[in-house]
Image 1 (cartoon, one colour):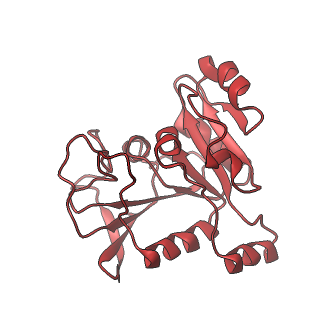
Image 2: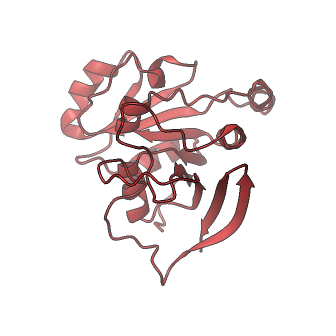
Image 3: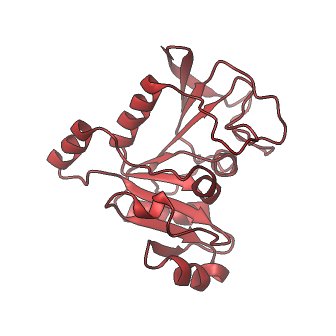
Length: 226
């Protein structure tokens, strides 16, 4: 794990038993249930920002807002905004400013992009988000240091697989919350939780399982970095 000053990083994902985030169809595959959706909403209410990859914005069109009015009110009572900051990173800047990431809710939105694409991405998204030069290619540590400087102490990452892989391979994850759905996808063309990489969290340096929780027919596995 890096020693650079950065937010606490919680990676949250739901997969099939065989490790897929979705199937290969045009419709989103539901891997969770109402109880878990409420749990995720509670986790969102505890963080300062939520990070998703650009591919997730294109494929899933997430709103990334806190659903519960009670939780939003509790954040206001603490002097915090009702919703966390929305964050994404992109190399190409191929993002539609009309997606829910940019339009849903009254909360800051930050897009980190590579230096060589910064002007193009700014021209495309400046009215919808703050666009930040994060190096070429995008430097994860630089992005996290910038978030830390903005007062983000706790960052929740909600995908997709490429972003999960990059963060885990870089040793930047402090906590993993993995929900397992009770079925198999079995399609190598579908997106996986992580792809091939050299990870520091191997058999000699494993995560530490600190909680298991059954919610109907799905189960939460919560791990911390040892």
